[in-house]
Image (tube, rainbow, N blue to C red; front, top):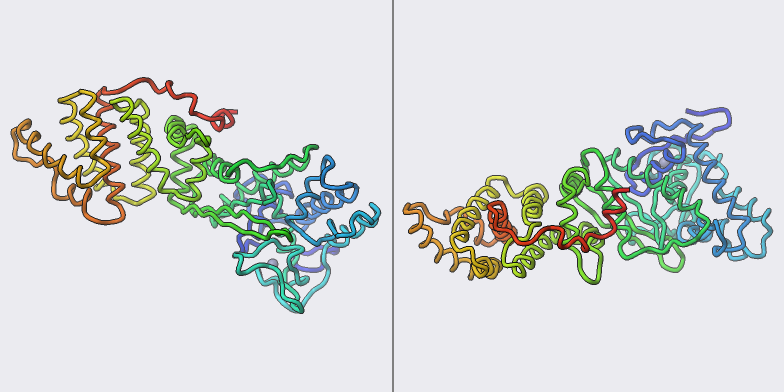
Length: 465
Ligand SMILES: [Zn+2]
């Protein structure tokens, strides 16, 4: 809707540009929207102008600052990675008076009034100007950088899209010389995560200290926490955009989590639902060199299949050391089973087949509850040839014991475990953890779970706050 003072079309749209979409939701956050179900497209002109006013006040306030070392210089420091060569940080900044700086910044951020005869390239509304690196962070890939060739005017944008790009940094975690934004094509997920980030960024900007260094993979840790604490089903994948628009090093990295994994992480690792499973998964990822929560977050965004593999190797290590299933077994086996079903898409029928075989193997092992029995199975499970030979030997014992003609391993189970394919490794690991689960459920356990409390790192304490 236009008002008397607003002459160009200024609606905020959700376009096909992920970072513009994050920015659009950040405009809503700056306008005071708190409901994830309210689309940024419903923002009134007044709300958009309110958001623009807040942003302008933040950047104009930097005019008073001597440099990026003084307290309260968050936006001035961030400007070098977000808006290089802008009126906030000209090379002659030091020689300008505060009033001159202020005027230049206000001029840069004043609401464009031009009405071009071209549409906005992102949303099709009437464009108000052509914009490049000074206003727009990176485009979709390094091959499509927003730097423009000499003589080219840049991207035609409308006021709504320009405002979205100016608001984008509020929807980003800014630290360590880079900005990180979480994007999803699920509009409600995008809105919720961005609204939350806007609050955090404003808090960070209000701090008088300028410490904004990034811990190792802190962006992944933050992003995973955002996923885990989202309260509603996630209907699309989530991407973590880590970028810098800086003159020194322009970078863009995109780390994606597909929808099934995003939803699995959300539902499985919610503190309120299966808190113990999440705690044990952190333990599984613990190493002397890195906190478990950090390795877990890194794997989620970079090597998701390692989430399951790490749980298996952790159980194998514990079993080997203890000579019996560790107390973490039942929870981690449950997580493993849900992972291969929900993330890898292994049908329930196949999971059931393998669990059935695992129960039979568990019964056989329980006949000889010595330390070496389980150690031997742990040894054979990871090597297909050894496992085949072991199963053939056990088949005889099984037949004698049961005095039935029913085979220990059915043809289908054999195929699931040994027929070449992408999933056989997961099937064999499923067999292993399910055998451990069977033994744990029937009372063959070692130690208590509290023995390893020291491996639960601070993420748990933070989340309980
Ligand atoms: Zn537009």
